[in-house]
Length: 320
Picture 1 (cartoon, rainbow, N blue to C red):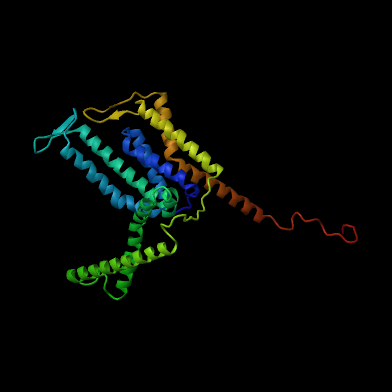
Picture 2: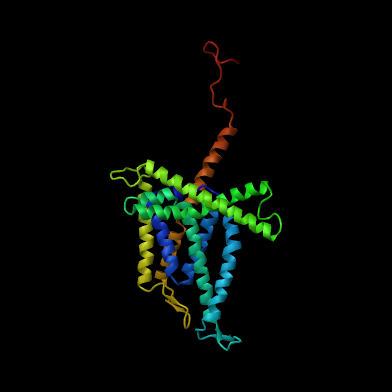
């Protein structure tokens, strides 16, 4: 896991970035754009979460990819390129297989982007952006976003405590394991209810919902945020305009076809890559700077501290 430079930017920049990359990943059908978005999402997720992201992709996303890719050809039989016929008599077409693969990759891409969103857009950033506009909804959404990770962490704590007294789900037979699992769930629900009461009391004591209540914020919109916001608007606006003009048009049914490749389409691919890879490029730039600083420090530490000092003198004369 690495320190993310993009997370230090203003929450409005981060929110606009994820709105663009997630929205474009959901509605753009071109396979090149899908590949760019998927690769950038995977690299950014690994940069943020390290080995956890790799394990998540292999254990959950890869099976989801296979299942989703197989479901579509089983139920959709559109397409002109017939490969064979299923036992039911329906044709198995190349277009249905490729569309199933495309749908699977799109689903994985969106889920991976949302996993990055949960790391970068913390609850305090979300409340900062929408607390004054939609205070109730922003509070519910921020609590919902933190619901799963908090409960997963608490389940591990309870399970480890039960394991110390021999009452974990891995101890005993099937019936005892079920009882131990129910006990862990009961403790978790009790903890959740107590935590909800504590949260409500804390919010009430801090004046939540009172008119004229002010909120503390550490976020300031600086010049670097303006540059990043302008960059996102230019790249996102350019890609959206190109897609609206049909330069990124691509269909899978009944036959695969798309807009003719030209210099304008190539430019849109470059813009889309720059948009999706913005956090990766920022982190790479910061890593290069940090390594350069470390090299300067190491080279300076190798030099003797007495090297540049003047020679000692006695009564104004240099000793021989």
